[in-house]
Each structure stands twice: as structure tokens, then as C-alpha cells.
Length: 196
Image 1 (cartoon, helix red, strand yellow):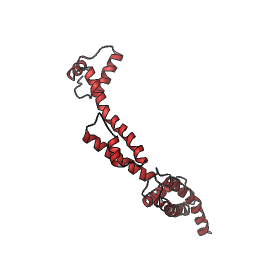
Image 2: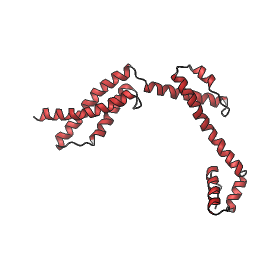
Image 3: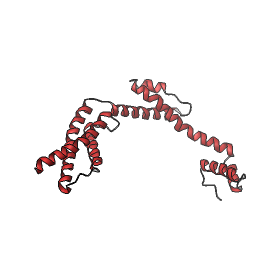
Image 4: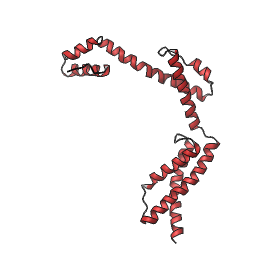
């Protein structure tokens, strides 16, 4: 078998599997391992490849709480250090982490736009979804509960557009669901009024 195209991870897995099942190594596998510097070198390459993503996660864990505390960008950059990344990479990773943390903070924070947008979105989404329920009942004479999913999506999209925040914001999440479920009795009420 040709192991040249195998990654280091695949090569190590093939090595371990072969030893577990047969107790011996295939000659071509052993040759490929030796060509890449031996088993220890392959394991070292795998460890080094995992270092950078682990370091990026570590930096993100440092930056996020500092943003929540209200620290300024320069002090965060001074506090975030790395033995794995060079200065240019570190600056890039810290800038991305700061941007992500600020974006997340802005998304989950409740402000006047969130409340006003959710209220207006609740009203608009409830009326649109109620109209959808009414129209479905009018056409078919039946209530299709599968429309609950559609009304939740419609409500969420309207509220998201008006607030600029997604479902991770508790107010947007609650307003979307209440709006969707308020549309059911409202749609039935509209149906009764119009048809009687």
C-alpha cells in the first residue's frame, strides 16, 4: 500500500491499528514513517500543529472577560502574551478576539433599540402570523400545527431585522416565541370575527 499521501495523523493511526491487530508493521508503512523522520517526529509534528489552535483558544478566554470588564484595547493587548505565536500573529489573534467579544457583548446586551424593536416586531410579527393562521383556516378549514414553526421563524426574522440582534439575546428570543404563540389565538379570533 502507498502511504505517501497519508497525513501525519492518518499515518500514526495506521501504525497504531496495524500494531494492535497484527503486531507487525507493513514494510511500506514503516518506510514512510522513517522517511518522515520516524515515529517520534510524526508525534512531534502533530503536537506542534495542535499548539496554535490551543493558543488561540487560550487568548480568546483571556480577552473575553477583559472586554466584559470594560478594559480598553491597548491594555488587553498588553495583557495577552504568547510563547507560541509571533508578535504579528498575536496582534492579529488579539484583534480578532476583541472584535468577536465586542460583537457578542453588543448582541446580548439589552438596550432601548432591543426593547422598542422587540415590541414593534412582536406586534408586526403577531399580526402577520395571525394573518397566516387565518388564511390557512379559511382555505382548508383546519388548523395545521406545523405552522407554529413557520410563525416562530417569521417572528424571529422580523424581530431580528428590527433589533439587529440574534436569538442569543434573551429579549429577542422571548419576543419571537411569545409572538409566534400569540398569533394562534389571534388568528382564530380573526377567523371567527370575519366568518360570523
